[in-house]
Image 1 (cartoon, rainbow, N blue to C red):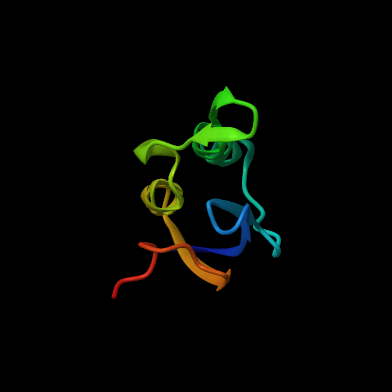
Image 2 (image 1 turned 90 degrees about the vertical axis):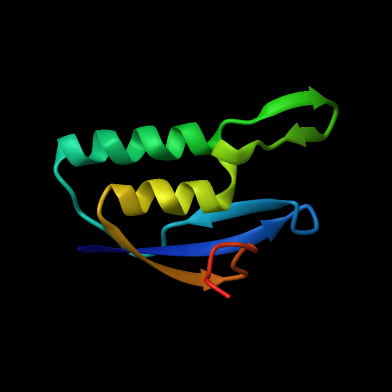
Length: 88
């Protein structure tokens, strides 16, 4: 399994989770396309007005981690890990 580090940063009082990948994870172009598709679908937001964001189940931090695991990544979390990511 491939290792991927996610550094989590809370924004807007913890309502938004920013995922940063602080360590390099080289991959072939075909694998990058799959990774990019997962990340792009996660980062989309639907704006409902000035400063308001609707986040659905597909764009939650948990959904991002699940999708990356489906691509074969073993995820290491750092920083302020959003609720629901780690088993309780």
